[in-house]
Amino acid sequence: MNWWRFDSTKIKAQNAKGRNYSAARVRLLLKEAQKKVNSYLQELDRVDAEEGKQSCPERMSATELKEKITQLQQRTKELRAMEEEVKDKGQVSLSDPDSRSMSMGHGSQVGYNVQVAVEAKHSLIIASEVTQTTSDSGALGTMALQAQDALGQKKLSVIADKGYYNGKEVLLCEEIGVTPYIAKPMTSANTKLGLYGKERFKYDAQKNCYICPAGAELTYRFSTNELGRAISYYETKACGECALKAQCTRNKENRRITRLAGEEVQEAMTERVRRSPQLMRQRKALIEHCFGTIKRSFGYDYFLCRGKEKVTTEFHLTALAYNLKRVCNLVGVQKLMAAVT
Image 1 (cartoon, rainbow, N blue to C red):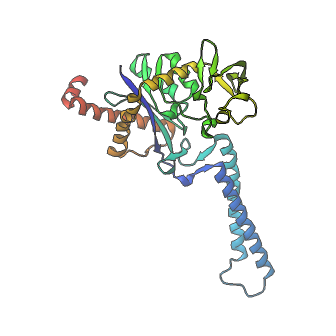
Image 2 (image 1 turned 30 degrees about the horizontal axis):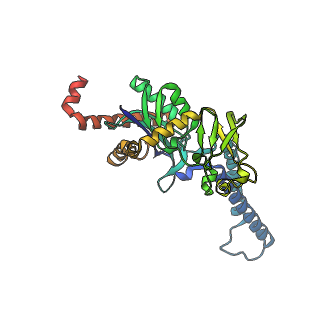
Image 3 (image 1 turned 90 degrees about the vertical axis):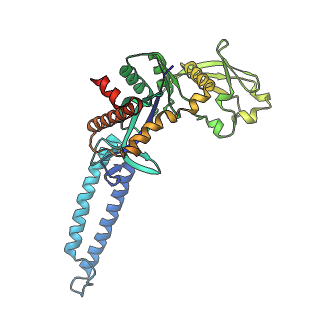
């Protein structure tokens, strides 16, 4: 079976950090501008009060103060307009309007999040997409569809890291014939508190119930729809006399478990991951070769173009150059030229 690896890397845009504005930064700049205006107004009052007296040579004149105030008022007007734009877009970049601030290395930079699908055996890029999102959680289905189109086949097995874990995206992959391998991140609030997380409860599909660590059954109670998701609730009345209750829940009443519609698909994926430890350990090596070559060997760690459409074309050309170099290393230049001609 051939494997495909999905991953992402952040690449800087032609937009300096100082020319990217978030809501918090605009508020801070407005506050600083108003503070300076107030300071200049107070200074102007002192100048007016001392009119006719010997002035301090280091102190600005009334004309200079008025010019400063006018400039700050104009700057405040611009910031107010930017504040409204930030409300609509989340953030504003002046040099490359499509770029976004995101974490890169040890700090934040302004750039793009580049998604790629790489063939595991030969480390060839078969699909790529430039995105403005800082997270990978919504990219799994999109990249799976692109990989299918590029390869002309429906049945694929793909590996991705925990950042791609998203219940809806996993369901989409199953629907279109893609088999994903993604380790489930531990996000349970109980686990973080040192209590039994949901992973400690075993689901019995025949009885439609959960078995707790103490062996009691959490039976189905009711279902509801929350934020567009169908959720079922399971509960037991055995908690009151259970010796493990202090390790299980801090609720005075009984422990409750929720189950999403289609969660059996996620459970099946979790079991696939559990049975494939060697494959999951190798997942980094399947794509880091690609990113390492592009960023270190090519020196390509920032875009030259501006705008998402142009940047996307730029990366596609970079991926083509990488693939050509990779094929030359695999089969040699003569065989490559023979295949082309």
